Image 1 (cartoon, rainbow, N blue to C red):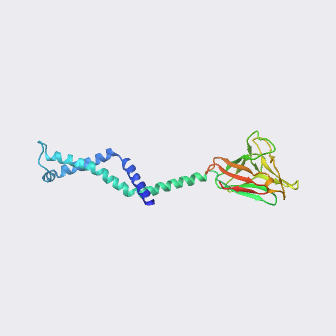
Image 2 (tube, rainbow, N blue to C red):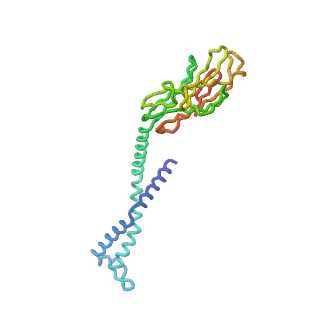
Image 3 (cartoon, rainbow, N blue to C red):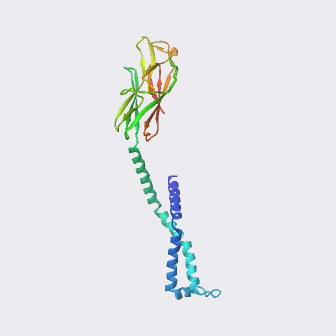
Length: 258
């Protein structure tokens, strides 16, 4: 299958290269060559050709016949040449595209995410590392679950190092998003609270509507909540927006595969 694909690509590349040639330059070249041969050896061509046709001399028929043959043979020879050279040109084109992609990556932020749930502090965090060029990052949140308060506007995840929704990161730097925390201060109840902030606002904690009882009936535990994190940047990330989903269980948290 791979060999067929390579042969097909080689054929298409040869056809495009042959079609892109200068046809008028071909015609002029063939005319000069055939005309020169007819001028240098007119009688030798005459001895190898038919007698005059309708009174037209061999010196005229031979160059015209050679010109027609040359116009037919030149495209075939040209196609054969491009077909033979196609693998080299395909490799060069692929190298240029790879180099262009690598150069584009070096001038764009590239975010790498690492999920972290600390069972001792009950904190859910997301570590963001910038492997590309410097940029400004922020993370919008979508919360799927019942909350004790209403969301009347878009919310963003909070950063450890700033109260603003956005933070700047140079190449190689890592910042941390504080997503949620399981509150165990009121024993034996456990209740999730999601950390959010808004544009121009202050960080706040949104508490879940339901609670779980430590040691209680699992069927009566709070339903699972989901947080969808969409990480964006300026300039745009080289790999587009990074999205991940976090599941908040009764007494545990996990990043779901995307």
